[in-house]
Image 1 (tube, rainbow, N blue to C red):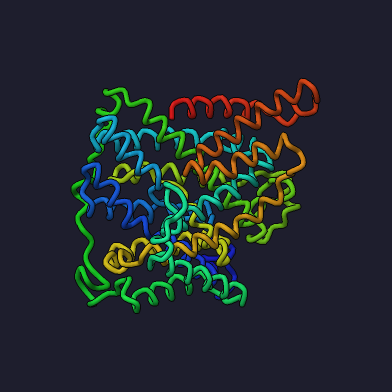
Image 2 (spheres, rainbow, N blue to C red):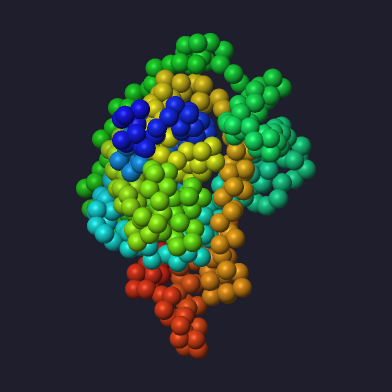
Length: 458
């Protein structure tokens, strides 16, 4: 255990098993990206097979760095929402080629890396008040729940489900999986989320609503050789993106990636116990140090997480995929006990294996993983109790953050509304109660101005 203890503080085989279970839970709840991302980017004219390989390799590289370099149990992959913006706004609406769009992603990743290499990234994250930290975690939990409910066809973007949808197999199977996971959690069964996903998939297959592999090798089997990466590898057009004045969409890629990452890391950190709930400060309890020893140290290694995210985006653009970001589905691994970078290391390995298991992974239906996402959303709601609901200058911005993240389907938009309302309310209240101005800091004010610009550009 020498190497594992030096890298991750792992001291026993039981801890290794715990991290493995956590990685499996995380991977199974985000494996859909291997199928969904190529589907979305193919609408931009990109080769779906090459995008699949780019998605897997970029995710594996970024997640490996998150584990080994940053030592966090978080996984990364091309971000949902950003891939849709890439295809349906930048390419199909604004008229840029997908090569130029990849160039814009690359530029945004470089800008992100430059910011991540400075001390400014810690100041930005540290400037977030504790009430908004808790709100971000709760909002991300709601966001995960909405994704799960949508994947299960329980809700859609137009409103509540009709009777036909409620009686559909996907709805019924998802509800079966949700109740099964809930029961397993009540009984304190280890690996409840993983067991729930697998059993729901198997029940659906038995009833004829899902497919299982029909062979060992080939497109209908378990294993197959991955498609060629050549159609997208190094096809980005940086000069073309710059020459056509792509500042607006490059800024959007950068802005959304940075603040999605910040929001996700804060939300996951709060839920995973990496942020001291009383002070908002980071501690490394799982590495053996007490929080008292690190009482005056804020977020050590959080800068490494940002660097990892930026490197993931740059790598993805070179390989041929949209912006890579930290995934909120990592919360599934946290609930299975993931505490160190070894979880991320295992997830990275699962991604590499997926290159040869694509036929199998592509058969996991969204309604089988949806219950896990819904349950993880519930688990992330614990932080909402940290919001002082009787102090309206804190409660209103927090509430706006919580509800706007899922309803706008954007963590960055939720942060924008929360930050700007927080600063405005504190400024106005300060004219009557001077102490309210003390809750503000220069970084928070500057961020609120940037968020106003971001909202104006949407």
